[in-house]
Structure formats: C-alpha cells, structure tokens
Image 1 (cartoon, helix red, strand yellow):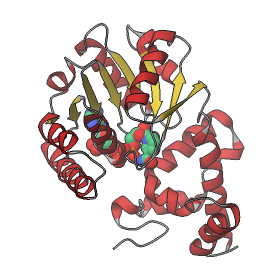
Image 2: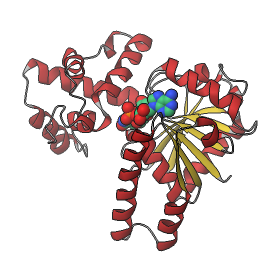
Image 3: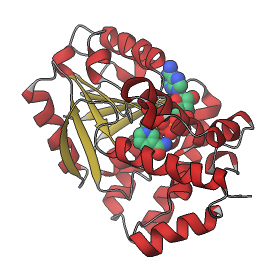
Length: 281
Ligand code: NAD
C-alpha cells in the first residue's frame, strides 16, 4: 500500500490529503480546475508549515509531505496507480456515481474505492462499479487533521478484506475506526444533523441568539462546539444536502429548517464563504 488518491479538494479533500501524506503515503489530490487546486495547495502548505513550526510534525514527515503530494486535474493520471482512492466531492449521488464509474475504469483491479459521504449509500455507489466488494465509506471528520474518528461503513457487498484494509489505513493515520452497517446518516450524521437542525429551528423561532444557543450547548451539555458554529464549519450547503438526503430516506424528523434553506439561497455558506450563522470577515 503506497499511493492514496483523493478526489475533491474542498473542505474535506484538503484535510484527507494532508493526513494521508503526513502518514507517509504518496498522495495525488484531484479536482476540476488548476485554480481550485492551487488554492488547495496554498492552504495545505500553510498547514504543513504551521504544524512543523509548532512541533506537531517531525522533519522527515515534513520533508516527505513536501515531496510526495501531487496536484492533478487529470483523474486518470491521478488515480491509475492508486492503491486506495478516497472520494470527497459534493454530497450529490449523481456526481459521486459518475466519479466512481470513471474510477472503476481507470484504477488497478485490486484498488479499494472509498467515499467520504456523510449520509449516502456505499451500496448504491458500489453497485455502479464492477467491484462492489471493494467499495466502502470512510467518513472523516472536520477538521480532518485534528479529529480522531473515521466511521467505516460497510455496504451490502463490501468484503471483510476491504473493511480490514481501511481499518488498517485508519490506524496508520493514528485515528480510530468505528464500524457501522449502512443506514442513512450512519451514527454521527444522523445524530448531529438532528441537533443542528433543532438549533436552527430555535434560532428561527427566536428562542435565543445563535451565540446563546451555542454557549448553552457548550457550557451546559459539554459539547466542544455549538451546533451552529459546527454547521458553519461544515458548510451550510453541504449540511442542507445532508438534511435533504436524510429527509428523503428517514422522513419528517429530518425536514431541513427553512432558515438553513434561506441562508444557502443567500450564499451564506458558513466559514468557507465568510458568513453563515456568524460573520468571519
Ligand atoms: P466542498 O464543497 O468543500 O468540496 C467539494 C470539492 O469537490 C470542490 O472542490 C469541487 O470542485 C470538487 N468536485 C466536484 N465535482 C468533482 C469531480 N467530478 N471531480 C473532482 N472534484 C470535484 O465539500 P466538502 O465539505 O469537502 O464535502 C465533500 C464530501 O465530504 C461530501 O460528501 C460531504 O458530505 C462529506 N463530508 C463533509 C464534511 C464537512 O464537515 N464539510 C464532513 C464529513 C464528510
């Protein structure tokens, strides 16, 4: 196991590429344009530099990372030699399926294909490939370089060997895996989306300000972040797609809060756009 290819260089793809290269792998990061990738490179380089300066990375890790992370818009060049591909494109089933179909035709027969979906079905994605037993979900958390958990979600046809393989990769990242049988939203998104949506409903109803809702959850219930701060970190467009999928699959309880829909329509996407429930400018 030598090469990991990460598809999508947004909030999560950048963090997964950073974590993979720091763990000693050769890494290709793929996205649609040079412009998107050069923005990703700037952010990853800044994180490598600050982690090294703060003593979180050893000299060898830093040197390896600087020499072994490649940015590539051509998916074939990025993925043809990969042992593991981790997809982190938009939370839209049609986009994910089109990426997996291409990967299936490009990648080595033995390569494992993982999706970082927050809610969706690795079974549905795997069924569109000729290697359903080698398709699995690896659900990372944001920010990836800090968060310890990876949920490993087994689709209907995912083999024991594939699950074992991604658990070993998880350990090589110095992270912990929990194994989950596929069901919409797995463990964490199913729970977290509900808490976040309730916080948004409270804000909309005027129960308390965003700051007070978040402080109540932090100081009273010992959550490390408030649910509205967390939604801003995730990205409100991504959170809305998660809610829409959970609403479609699990029902009424997950109906997206109208305030969330309104914010996304206004382009208030959270931290990545400079404004969400809070102002980051
Ligand atoms: P994002 O919008 O920040 O980034 C998505 C990236 O994918 C963009 O850079 C886009 O240009 C790229 N992309 C789109 N189509 C592509 C294609 N065909 N080929 C290559 N690149 C393509 O999204 P994100 O927040 O990083 O989320 C990515 C995935 O990770 C989603 O499935 C999401 O549900 C999941 N996830 C997100 C979080 C989070 O906190 N944001 C946490 C866990 C999981």
